[in-house]
Image (cartoon, rainbow, N blue to C red; front, side):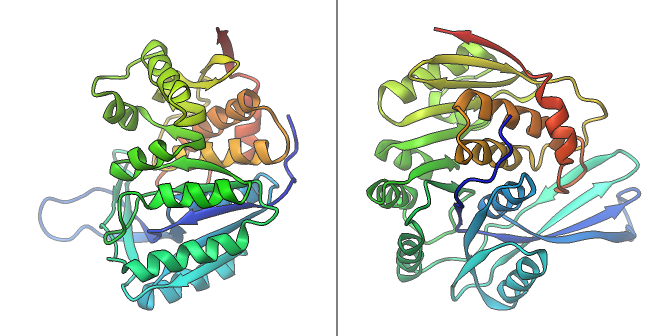
Length: 320
């Protein structure tokens, strides 16, 4: 397995949040439920990916929006964490999300508001800033939801600019923004089972269903590499060379939350691609990392050593 390094990756987070993680013994139906603050951290798809790329030994710059008092706090938290980032000021207030961990049931609840409304000029400013950072950056990761006010084809505009700069876009989003970006075409697209079902219109329950979707994405030019994750089963990685089933490793402990599994997986595979690894091997570390993320409550970071140890237990099967 390649030990990271490589050129820096740019991540794009249009709708970040500050995650307030609280812990409560038991949620009471009446009266007050006494909680303690477990952590306060910046969240949002691209920022999470940048954070984990650095934890794997890679380099990343997180481009994100920030507005209001919450946006100022978001910038300060990123500075304190040591994440290289570029903030684009917006008029609206950056959102705060609540992550609640109930210790009695060992269940996590992630409560996320929609976020601010962006003006057209703010979206254009983000694209202009992105263009300035693309030189010499072979990979760009666009991850997370779009805030209100931006057009559905916003990630498609990101894809065009990334391609024109000679970089490669890794996309992880959902909804109308996803369909528009795939119509434009991306380098790598990762989707979970829910997103896959929204594209196919029917259940995606196993590797055969994932293969049908990935085949369609490749043949239509929507993606050069398609990765569909299948929960506890693992993931299917498809390229022009064929389809590879990556079976998830057995967990060495109790699964506590899947809140950060997707971002963790994207970070691992992007780190490996930037370091020169091939897509299937990069995806294998991604599957192992998603499994490691399941072992942590709320949105807390996975154990990098556990992720690397699980890599050897990811079974692969290549289909033509």
